[in-house]
Image (cartoon, rainbow over all chains, first blue to last red; front, side, top):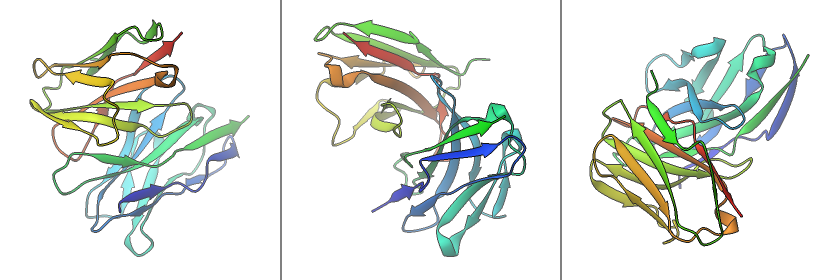
Length: 114
Length: 111
């Protein structure tokens, strides 16, 4: 069965520190992979996505993610976190078989210390 | 520049009183989705439309219905809201499997 796991429910980092949010997926083939960010009371904003090709993808707000097929992972990174990055982050897997549906992970809530 | 618009942003209804949430899009996307998101949880897909083809998730309660009168608009009807239906409802659109664009959400409170 297809699934997405975000092992860290909460992460706290200091402003200026580096960040890595983990995402592992289970899918029969290479899926479409996404990271979304959600600020409190808001909708989801797409940070970046991976379909194929270069396994390191750049996104908005200084985020990047690396696809590792051997580890079934798609971890999100940022070299220097800003206080405004505090939010909930969702990893998602998209179907490549025409169902148009995504499976979301349970999310990681990021807290940034000043 | 708003692309996916949800109205209202906050909705208060009474237990058992029907309520309708609306979503509109300016992207002309074929696919529209409704998700339910409870506090500190992932969005849960309720149903989606591919054009006028309606696709219901197997575990979506019958209490939830949807209408899509045209490409731009999609409605979520909750026939008899219960306390457990209080949540954020997110609308999203896509033209293919490679992106979904989300609206700001409607937070529903059931009294």
